Each structure stands twice: as C-alpha cells, then as structure tokens.
Length: 541
Image 1 (cartoon, helix red, strand yellow):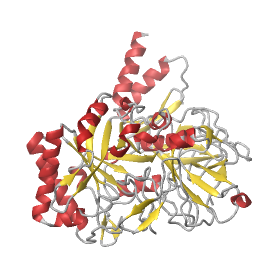
Image 2: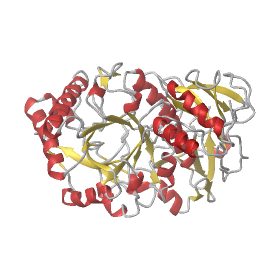
Image 3: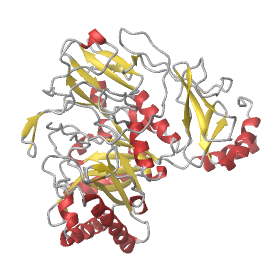
Image 4: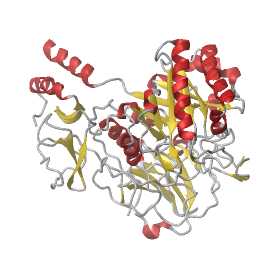
C-alpha cells in the first residue's frame, strides 16, 4: 500500500503543475468582496489604473489599495495592478510612440510596484492596432511593434529593479493576435519572451451590436451564424501565431448578456440565433444606464452577473430556470441560454457545466490555466469551483452528474469539447471586455445551426469503447486514447454517437489512467501503467 501511495504521489507531482487561476478585482466593487474566497485564486488583477498622456497613471481607489492587497494576500494569491481596460486604453498608442511619455510609463510601473509591494503589472490595452472604444488613439501600422519594444524594455526595467523574473508582466488580450495594418499578426512569439502569460478575453463575442441574438462566450461558433469567433478559435489563433500554450490563460465570463428578440423565439425554440432589437434592456439589479463619453450615448449594459441570476429568481438552481424563463442548452456553443416569452428577453450566459467544458479543453491544449471576469460576480464559488477543474494540462473527463433543463425539451445526451478550425481574421465588435466605468456592473455596451438541447450529461471515460476516430459510439461524453495508451497525442470524445478526434498539446501524449485519460510526457507512461495495474478499481486500456 505504501508503494502505491508513493507512486500516486509521484505521478501527481510529475503530471500536474499547479494551474493558474486569475481573477479580476474591480476596485469599484470592493464592498462586495467579503464573500470572495481568495484562496481559490493564484493571481488577482486589481482593475484599473488609467494611463495619463505624460506616461504617468492613476488609480482612483489608491487610498484603498493597501487594504485590497492585504485582503487578497490573506488567501495566498499574488496581486497585480491592471492598467488600461475598455475606457482606459485611449492613450496607449500615443504614449508608446513618444520617447518621454514612454519612459515615464516604464518608470511609473516599476515605482508603483515598489511603493505598493505588488507582484507585477497586467496590461489591458484594448486594442493594439485596432479601435476599441471610439475615442482611442490608434496607429494601425506601429502600435503592435511599439508594444513589443515597450514590453522588452519593461522586462528589463523590472529585472534591473527587482531581480530577473521576480515581478510579473501579464497581458489581457482579445480573441485574435495583435493587429498590424488591419489584420491579426501571424507571429507573436517574440512577445512571449518578455511576458509571463497572456489572458485571452474569450467573451463579449456576440451581443447587442449584432443583428441577431447569440452566445456571449461560445465554446465553438457555428458557420454563418453570429460572430465567427469562439473560445476554441481564440486558443488556436494565438498558438498558431507562435504564442506558447503554456503561457496562455483562457478567459471565462462570470456574467451573461441580455438582448430583446424581435419575435417570439418559441417559434424556432431550438435556435438561439434570431433577429433582435437594438435597444439594450436593463440587466440585473446592479445594471443602470450609464453615459459613454466617447460614443456620446447613454445605455444600459444588459449584463446579468451569475450571482444575480441565482439570487434574483431567474435560476432556481445552477441548471433550472424559474417560470416564465425557458432554459435551453446549445450543443455547438456549449452554453446555456434563456428566453422569457413575456418580455421577449434573450439571455446568454455561462454556468458550471459550460465553464467546466472550457476549463477541461484548455487543460487538454496545454494552457497554463484560466482567468475570469470578475471575482465579485460568482455565487457561493459555484463558477470558480467549476473553473478550477482545470488540471494543468492533464485533463480528465468531466464528472458525471445529472444536469436537467427547466424547459419544454427533453434531456439529451452529453456533448463535450470538440476542436474546430481557426476562424479567418474578422473585425471584432467594439465591445468591452472590462469596463472601468463605475456605473455599469461589468462591461460597457458598444455604440454600435445552433443545435439546442437540454443540459449535457457527462459520464466517465469507458475504455471498452472503440477509439477509432469517427467510428460510432454509444456513450456520449466518454474519452479514449487512440492507438492505445501513451503512443501519441490523439484521443477521441464520443459526441452525438460518433468518436470525434482531438489532440493533447504538442510534446505530450494521451495516457489512460484509471477511468479517464490525461495528457502528459511520454516518459510517464511506465509510471502510469505501474500505478494503474496495482489499483483494484482501475481499468486497463
């Protein structure tokens, strides 16, 4: 027994590096943080400091920063200051092209870390080479090269002031790489030399700026429906452009977006893409009309925080809706959505099921961890606990559980993460990933064939199924290594009665262990086999 325990401990140590869990902390919501368990996070990014034209930057809640740092550190997390954000990115382009303001921004960041005992800086420039908020300065040709030079100098500044790699530099990035001359960069590998990791903001993909309703944060997108961007395509876009997977962190939204359908969506009740009106409805109890001084419009955001979906009577449980809301599950976007026939409100959001699907997929692709916006939006840690199913590159199949939909549809079999091709470069709507405005609950609203079913039901991996790609299968939600245990990176997921091919991250192989699979180094196969053969409850592949 001691030998088995030792092998299990060694296996765990070899395979599972501690995954990163990044949470954004909106300082204007600090009065809502008492219920947040910061021990569930590894990094907290305090939002936002705003750059000034001379290269200095200001944090409006500076007087409370020491208290915030103590609060976060009590849970063991690192604390970074996030600079920029949706309404705070308008001067980055101007600052970085001027030598004087550029140097001052470098020294300001270093001095701010030192004076406030922070662990690093997170830069949330929305977006280099592309217009985000309407009054942003943009240099389509030079923003991205200027940003690279700035990051190289910032790394040198930090290493000189604090010691090599002592302080963190992280980025918040959109779902496609930085733009140059109107198109996403095809090679961003050089950036990763100076940055510890980048957080992909894989949300705000569809919203009130679209002609049709659609998923806020789709796992996959459906061709010819909605914006052709997704969680999967974002990971592909960055890794295909040379950013190392183990320096990427996948972003999750702990909120949903509501819009108003033009017609009764029950006429096509399984389709979440239907014509919508452009008057943005009020969202949850924290939402309110706010004035965007750049766009010069006043609008609500339409956002619903997860906690208010749970405590304002919209959801009666994580996967059941209260009347008159009808809940559906979309098997392409892998997200739930709600429709209220009385108000014609459509609401797309993430729940523990969809969060877990994304987290597991990110682990299989070898990513460093997950990021979420924002920590105050959770309800009793339901979403962060689902996000923490991330296994640091060693994915297991999702836990088996019954997840029933409060809708007129019947429950269907599970669907699980399926890789898709990267999308072609597509202009991103001018949507906010994070708003520095204190009058909105989460994000600012811009000026400008889904297969739906009931919730998924995941079952443990069953090694007795055929693992041939595209072969028929009977147990939806099961995972199997292709060509046996530890021979290559390929595995299959049973989706809709067919074995859908997928792959572990580059350099790793699929390993069968007990009732599931994991992705690890080829040299660990013998160790996995040794442990598995000694366990009476294990199944061989």
